[in-house]
Amino acid sequence: MAINEYEIKKQICDIGKRIYDRNMVAANDGNISVKLNDNEFLCTPTGVSKGFMTPEYICKVDAKGNVIQANGNFRPSSEIKMHMRVYEKRPDVGAVVHAHPNFATAFAIAGIPLTQPIMPEAVIALGCVPIAEYGTPSTVEIPDNIEKYLPYYDAVLLENHGALTWSTDLLAAYMKMESVEFYAELLYKSKMLGGPKEFDKEQIAKLYEIRRKMGLPGKHPANLCAELNGPGKGCHSCDAACSCGTKKAEPDVEKIVAEVTKKILEQMK
Ligand code: 13P
Image 1 (tube, rainbow, N blue to C red):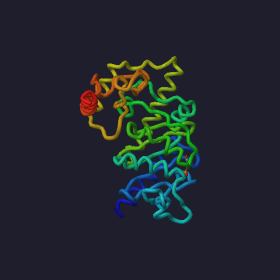
Image 2: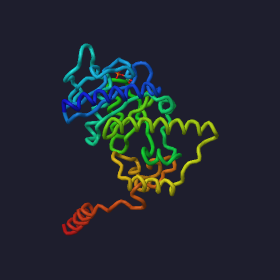
Image 3: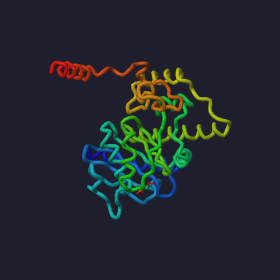
Image 4: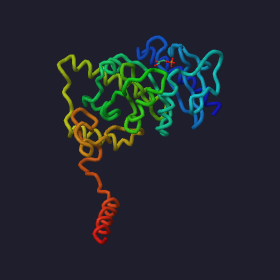
């Protein structure tokens, strides 16, 4: 691990510079973490510009966010609990990125989730992007509020705050952030042009099928099924068909047998 660790620290610095250079963070905003193994994680320090970091800035923490190693006055990100909740609930995740990209954050502030299906890449890569209810930064409010989205999504907006993405590795988690911001920007601009022309359910079903065939890692909210869960429970604003197609919920045979048995026994009394 020791050889790779320095390379990963350099990669965290590269991605920090990238989010800073692309206006995805201002001043000292944003934070990044990478999982080394079940009990060791690298993360950006609190209160520094993520655009000017060098490898010795990077801190190492355990699964609870406690410091294992930190140079000088560097201390782990104030949002480390948010990162740790993602790793705890999603063992498939290897890296987490938090930023405040312009358009995505504007949607998060306006309280508008990204649910309009408007372009193939966004539907395939993200599905839709919900907004986790507002939480005070650095407290457990944010981890608690993102938790319910973790089984279905690889990206959320944080209400009145920013965006959070995660994936198998750091580059993939960063790419998710780019995808969220690009989707938000296009949605905003198409709204300015009179409103986007949305995909219909059939077009979305075909895109979900492409995603399935690609075998992409991570979670996708296509599994949130409007047909099974009722109106408004699908991913997109049009309640597009989920990946389980028209399949209806399987009857719970054991439950039915138990109920029938109970009734027969009652009648025999
Ligand atoms: P840290 O510098 O503590 O990581 O915090 C930055 C931030 O964006 C908080 O939301």
